[in-house]
Amino acid sequence: MNFAPIVLFVYNRLDHTKQVINALANNAFAQDSEFHIYSDAARDAEAKPQVDEIRKYLASVSGFKKVHIHLREQNLGVDANVISGVTEIIEVYGKVIVLEDDLVTSPWFLKYMNEALEFYEQEEEVISIHGYVYPVTQPLKEVFFLKGADCWGWATWKGGWDLFEPDGKKLLDAIEQRGLGAAFDFNNTYPYLQALREQAAGETTCWDIRWYAAAFLGEKLTLYPGRSLVKNIGLDGTGTHCGDSSSHDVVLAATPVPIETEILPDKTAYDAFADFFFQLSAADLPKKNILSKAFRQIKSSIRAAFRVLM
View 1 (cartoon, one colour):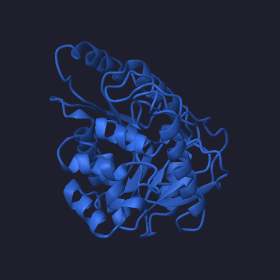
View 2 (cartoon, rainbow, N blue to C red):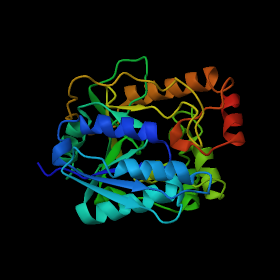
View 3 (cartoon, one colour):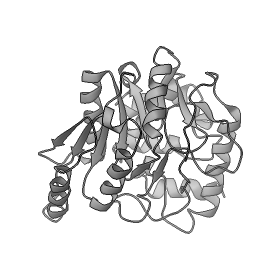
View 4 (tube, rainbow, N blue to C red):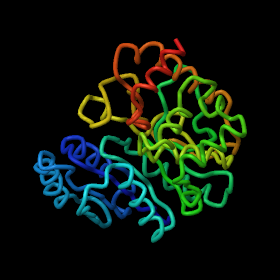
């Protein structure tokens, strides 16, 4: 098997970063994988001691085929750091597995990612592989496809990443002109379109809403596991743009997840996601300032959109 490189983006959360790397090192295939870590520079003098502490720890990381540490000299912010880092790695290797510093993985994450990358590489409809699945109440298939792309432990090929569109306004105009807003918002249960609108207006810098929108408009599919291979430990109030919530907590898959399924959007999974988003908006958001990390910089207008759904 031609193992994909792993890319991890970190900033100033040492404890989270250690948990992420320790879990990843315990994965099957970790010792066969090249590991690239992008450490963003401190935003200001106050953040510098934590960033320095992270960088000291990174020098000791082992357990992989090879570890490459990329130290940013200037603060890029998470969005620019991810976009440039993924682009750099995928130009060299042709494919990539991507994590951020609060995504803890199952020991079977790398097996699933590498096998799926290899199996679906020639399928033009498939743009990416995803490792996290929401804690929905409905039963799901072992693996399934949904239209679009996602960002909590994911992988893609150069051909997929080439479809990334940095111009949010271009994406927004296309979705609105084609009347796709309701489908883009999972039957109007999650304000993704508003997130894209704010990015297009320069109010946020979110890379992930543009990734989702580009894949969605391209009629591309992402593979999801029915049992989550990724757990987000960052919704604990420690992140710059994240609040505190247990609504996205999952039990990590304890056994391997298969990769083969029909290459078609799964309506049952789509409806299950929509129901999860609706329940989240009705139960969590009026009480807590929480949004999925995927669109972590969306503020008052998005919270208002959720209240409309109640």
